[in-house]
Length: 182
Image 1 (spheres, rainbow, N blue to C red):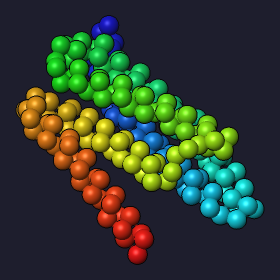
Image 2: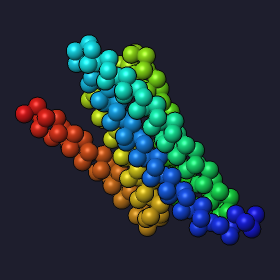
Image 3: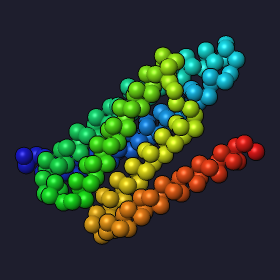
Image 4: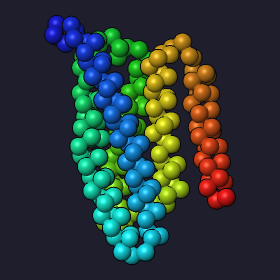
């Protein structure tokens, strides 16, 4: 146990490194989903070539970067909680862990999307996938602010901030759509 406690800073540094890697993988993965979906409008030969390439890129990103980063994020986060079990008595940590569970669900839904795209059976539009990508952004913002601000932010400020970022993202998406159409 002393080994875990003495190396808390190492677990924390590794946790942060793999959180960054995990989110990078999730963000890029959903962009690949969008491009994969949009390739359906291309001529047949071009569509086939593009989708074969997207399948390779998605598979490598998912199994070499994103999923290992997710696993290592959880491992080093768990080591931090074992080394400093007092964190589990703090309400902000319960909320953070709830967001982490939601992020894990998001991760596995992305895996399902990848598998359906590979089979050609995905019902997601590129617009839906753009919105889906913003959920990861909201989770990132919520988790980072929660960890940094802990209880100093207050419940009301946290809720207003969370929904404020969500509204700003939605407005940004609408402006992007309008810009893209023109």
